[in-house]
Image (cartoon, rainbow, N blue to C red):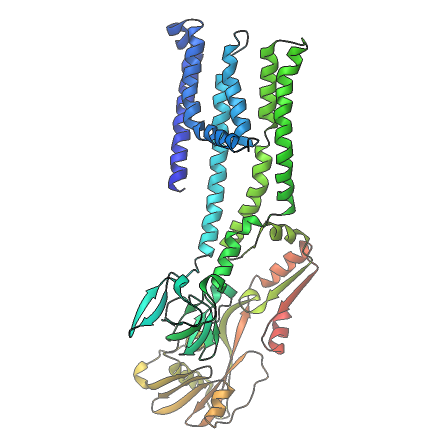
Length: 491
């Protein structure tokens, strides 16, 4: 709970304690013994008024403010009229007192409102955690030094500097530097994206390795991260059909209930059908029973809770209308990497050339990749069961987008893709297995290749089955990976 909710809870607890204390004093006859009759009735009125005002003064103020603005017909107005009416019954001597009921109704209403506020607060926290992608500052070079400025101050065409570990604050194009970007918060892709001069970068990504100089192509307000935050913050404005119906219903229903209660309280006694006190009580009872609080609150709250719960799982929902539309979905389209697969790489095969030990190929590759934090390099190092001796390694160099080169035990080792092999004039051959092929060359001779593949998530198949069971007719996978890799995952 936040501070406001804790203060609210304390207020309700104090009011509840006073309410039950007054009820106990009233029921055991202490008030009658001290004040006599009808003094006990008015003492009870004054005492019940204390917990009523402690618990419900904000509801009374809200109702008054809404009346002054011409927006009287809401749940605050109904609760105010009904509870004040219950207290007002004390002025009808021939009726039973109803101060306890008036105070109790307000207390129970406030307890419900507190639960609602707590539920909404939890959803907001989930959304806020999901939205923790907003950059706090941007680095701009001024007089040879880096200055941190508000992202809103950066203009289109300015060159910003993004250091390792920092978020890219604004969309732009890399003009200097190479690095790996963690795009998981925006795309769900767990494999870092390689960027170099000329590559486009989007705000919200985390720069992992090298320093980047980026020329901005958008203002901060129009950047990717700002648009995502705006979509989530304004999700409640995109109401579902059910919510729109409830809103329209409440605008019509509430005045009808109010005037109907007024008619119940006035018309029958005017026609001589009974005492005023009886019919006023019936009108007030009708008002409380007919209050649409649960209906008006529950529908929007359920949608907001759904959006918050989804954000807690890393799912962005643009609005209640989209959440409602999910009930009619018959086709679901999945990305592959990081969605159906783990997005992490594992060594699945080592194919060494004739006369070369596969363990030797893996050992040399692991040592050459020793200083790299790329997921592919990490998978190679994890597959190697031995201990990597960094004293054996010299001149380790990462060749952007291609692989690495290093001297291991005075042997020149190249580990990377076919472009790395071609660039250094080494022969190589492809593999019949699906996955990422990591070629290894030692002293200019092709030693073999390591096959690395993303692994299908353990629960992916079960998730597809459950979607079909829920009424989804087709599940489609989209990927930019090779066709044979896609077919392997699909089957």
